[in-house]
Structure formats: structure tokens, C-alpha cells
Image (cartoon, rainbow, N blue to C red; front, side, top):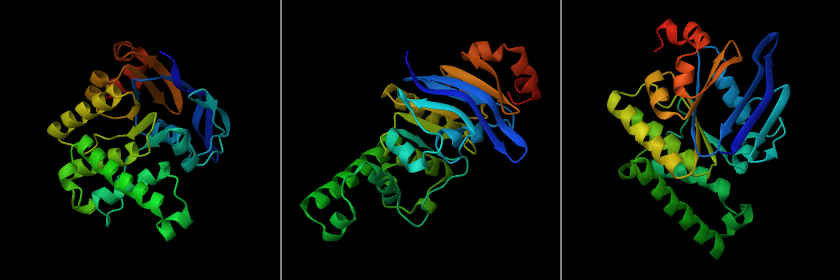
Length: 256
């Protein structure tokens, strides 16, 4: 498999704290890639560097064969094909589920401000296409019945699914999920596993931060482990589970 995303020697500091220290990863195309480690290991910081919310001080970020400048803004990274969800759900709570997805879909539209104001034929046709695609995506993630409900009225599990639908609306090549199973019951977690498997089967690479080690090891093709801002292991789930450094830093601490 070819690498969709390569991170080379990434370093990120917050004042005197080195949150990421010489981190390199190679994420193959069309796989589920897990990122695990103790709290404070730097997982979300790395997500934020990948998606442009943080700017690394040094290193390289190569996506789909293109070197993405470290100062590239999040909206520009979305246009390149990287979308994400957040550990703490970030929805437009006073908008409907359908509207939440439609907002993200506008990242792939061509109608500008003038077209939106004048409502010319192309703009109206594009808006209908946006609405139709948003309905399709809500059905895809399993919450099509909730299209007209406010995001704040959805169950916790359905809000997680709505975030995924919104991210998918940007047509990503890489979907980065930050602890999507957090707070889910076993039934919801099983449904999430099936959804991620389906997304990968449809050709989208998934990068997954997750503390549910059973979910990660049963779902991911490859796994990397961070500890104190450094990568301490990378490989198949079986290789990572048998790594003495991982057992000492994470799996042996009761996280499994």
C-alpha cells in the first residue's frame, strides 16, 4: 500500500514544554490507523498539527504526495482532503442535523457570495444538491430519521454520528476521529465499529484516537503508540500489544 499521509520529525512546543518530539508516522492509503497512549501523550496535539489547528515548529507533513506547509490553515487542509471530529462534540446545537451537514458540504461548492445573494439558477441547483447529499450522508451514518431534529436534541451516540456525517460531507481522503467511542455504551460502540469499517471499505482512510483498546486492536490495520510526546511503537495490533515499552507505558497500566 502507498502512504496517504507522512509525518516526518514533527516537533511542537508550548512554551518550554515539548508536546511532540521528533514524531514520524506513515499512514497507508485505505486503512484504519490507530493512535493510542496514556493521557497527555500528545495524541490530540498530533491531530491538531495534522489538521492545522496547531502549527508545528519543525518537520514535514506530506499528504497524497503534496507537502503541506506547516502554516496552512484548517480550511485549506479540509480542501486538500483531511477532515476530523473532536474529542468534545462540536456541533451547531441550534441547527438541525441536516443543516449541520449542509454547512460542511459548502466546502465543496462553487457558488460565491454573489451567487448566494442573487439566487441564480446554478446557485439554486447547487443548494438542492447540497441538501440531497446531506440527506444521503445522514442515512449513511444511520440517523436519516433525525434530519429535521435539532442537534442538541439527539442522543449522545447520534451526535457522534452526526459529527462523522458532517466530516464526510467535505469529501475527505483521510477522516481523523478523536475518541469517537468516548461515552458510548457497548451497543453504540459496536455500531461505530461497523460504520468505521464501512467508511474504510468505501476507500476513505481513517485515523483513530481511542482509549478503548479492544476497539482499536480489533479494528485497526496498524497502530502507533505515543508516550510523553514521542512515538514508542508502531506496527500491527499484535506487534504493538507484545511490545514491552507499550506494556510498561500504557497497556500494563490498566488501560486494557
